[in-house]
Image 1 (cartoon, rainbow, N blue to C red):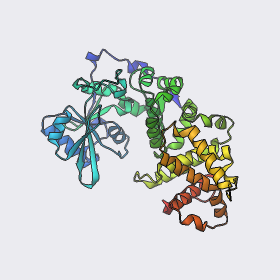
Image 2: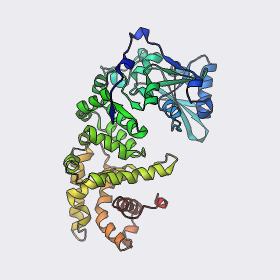
Image 3: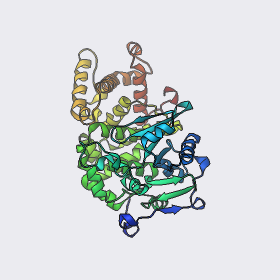
Image 4: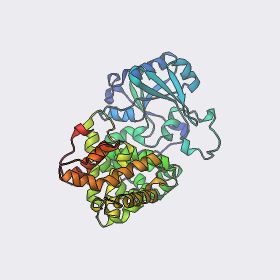
Length: 409
């Protein structure tokens, strides 16, 4: 669903006149006790050292919505060098924009960033490394972020939320909105449209009309993005527990056909749409049932499941005869098909491609054995046997069979 922008609400003043809307503690649901103690330690140490520290991004969004954040990220006016001196149990990562990771017991990591004036992808001359002038103010940091609902700051001293972009209104109204002019922001970094779709799918929010129209108009610009970035974003969506809703929005906007053009005709004639949705429902069940955010399926299995409706129709996979020379013939056809459609498009590693190929080439025989309630003895000796068991069980569930046992995962 798409809603119209509240343009009067969004009308920006001159930069020098913009003031944050301050939401007092009594008017929002976030309490210090909701924040991880490690994040609180970082915030209080920054304060005691004379710096400003803010809980930012998805942590504020999720706490406001009554959810438990996976991560508690912090922004501050302290520079990376100052942070390293303040937190001895830390390291600096990143080349363009440096982050400081603060380490705690139990493998807990809190990422701390210095407030920035612009996004990496809003810098026009990408050959020149940023200097200190990329550090910015709260206001600048808010406007360089992708979505209004991810552009809020929680300030620990007064327990207030600082809002420069109308993010609290959008949280209350259930709207996903790209910060600033969505046309300009998407052209500068097309991956922003994937993030808008992701958060709409995860929250059940609507994408505002201007952002939606920009996504539809510029969806083909995703082809200009580095394949590895697209792959990383895709994997996040597949393990989110909301991949079905994500795919639905991607199909409506045309983004899905841009990412997977080989699926376009199959979706148009409704040939594999229902099966694709069923597979995504199974993936969502698996990741939602975990409750702890654990990722049960590795990259090769996620990609194999996502592409199964297509490869099944392309090669008539499950009906193939794999005895004798049939195995080698099918193996070659699968490798060629994957190379043509996904390996270069998503920068899939050779090892992942081979793992996907192995799952597919063993599916016909494995499915026949499953119907006989047997398992091929020769396959049990293979290192990939368990992956074949899992993928076959999930395909069977998606096709209306027995629900795959959680014990498998």
